[in-house]
Length: 156
Image (cartoon, rainbow, N blue to C red; front, side, top):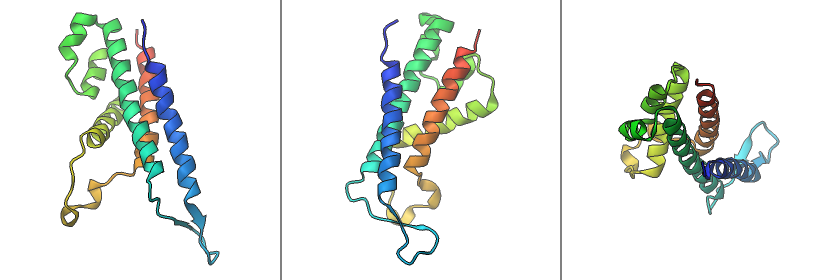
């Protein structure tokens, strides 16, 4: 089977590494020597952009992984019947029963949807729960897709 799946994973991982490096560049020790850091404003938002790339390509990788695995386990015809289901439902249909992994999958789906289908929030209506930390979500997304791939490899 021909696929670019490993390239998608590599792009996600490389973007996350670059984002982490860029984030470290804007973090400086406090001038008075006290514990903690001062984070300078990142005008071009380069680290954020790299985290977005990591998140987007994590999703591309995961969708390719599910499709490839689904057509191998079920068949192309059977996979087409579940193709529009939510990620965690697809994993369950493919034989994944690990509740922790399925919960992480749901979180991944929600974060990915928030990223890809962003809806603006009026500042005066925003709550702290409306915001996600891009670097945390990107790192967790990469961990999740790797764990999902490992779980799918173990299926009979």
